[in-house]
Length: 350
Image (cartoon, rainbow, N blue to C red; front, side, top):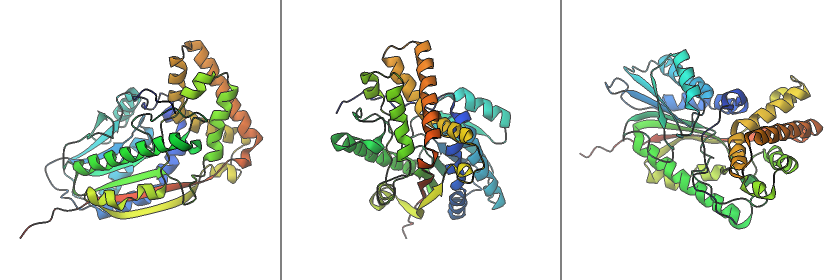
């Protein structure tokens, strides 16, 4: 088990908006949970203080703006008497902030600020947040526990390496809930939407994820690059997400918790897209979240800019070819955790 640099987790790169349609499907699946959370909201919306909504893990912003506007629209539909609304788009300092700032300027439908800070730290003042939201973000770890010797992804980790990823994931989840609890106003809500493992310990993504490593092995990665090519995320189980002890510790009560199997790539299943389109869709999904790690791996090994471009092109072409050879072998039923937490109201002493 090899320990790597601690600052391994990075923000999303410049291609995320273009390649994150699959992540958008998880956001759309969370819309019923968003509405239920707003129905459960119990804060004074007429206060002169800003009504703050935050998206933790906004990436380049296209998907983030989409769900923030859905939240705002439902607040308006439910006649919440909000005097002053402010949206906070949060992600790491290394995120591609230029893209989201451009989108916000073009859209200009709500007041917003950006927060370049890890969501495993406190990002907002105590008792200031009314609605917190995060989707397909908190599986990213705050730091790399170790390199994986047999793969690039936690789905295939074993022994001490798996234990290290599990331990880091546990620490990060504790930090995330603790800081959101401090930030939430009493009666405020937090919505979590994320891919998770089912009771059998599978996500439904194992076969498609295996392609990333197999194709890297064929794409001229050196042995050291393959070892360094470890992506710092961990897929929690549904049981990991629904941790009643942690919820109680941080004064959070469960409004909803459910594990939902949902079909991805439905256009292919229903033959509404060609095989070429299907292969490009999966590759775009890979690129959205894995390409920054791959680029950094190759940069650290001394590859030139031209080498990196050539290797990436070879890698994605190999992935497309593999997908076309076995399209029906790839998964489409993926498990999601949708959880709504509400900060408990302060008890008034008589």
